[in-house]
Image 1 (tube, helix red, strand yellow):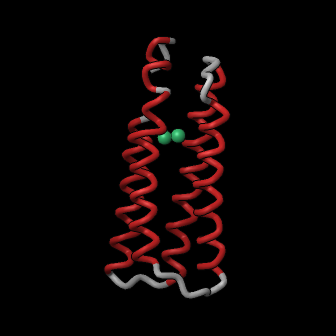
Image 2: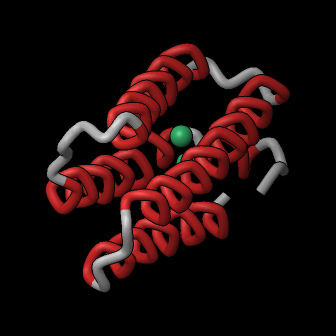
Length: 119
Ligand SMILES: [Fe+2]
Ligand SMILES: [Fe+2]
C-alpha cells in the first residue's frame, strides 16, 4: 500500500510539473484522469484488504474514499468542460488531502493488517 501511496504522490508531482511547464488543458486532463484511475484502484485495494480481514473501521474509511473521489471527479469534469479552475490551488489541496488521508486515516488500518499477516 505504501508503494501505491508513493505512486500517487509522484502522479501529483507530475501534474504540478505539467502545470509549471505550461502544458495545455488536454494534457492536464489526461494526467488527472490517470491519477483518478489509479486512486480508484488504490482505494479499492485498501477496501478489499479491510473487508477480508473484517476491519471495523471499513465503512468510515469507505465514506472518506468516496468523498475524495467525488471531489476529484468533479474537478476533472469541470476541467474537461473548460471551466476556469485554479489548478495550482487545486493541486495544493489535492496534495494536502492525500497526505492527510495517508498519514491519519490510512494509519488506522496499518497495525490491524499487520496483525492479520497481510502486510
Ligand atoms: Fe491509501
Ligand atoms: Fe485509504
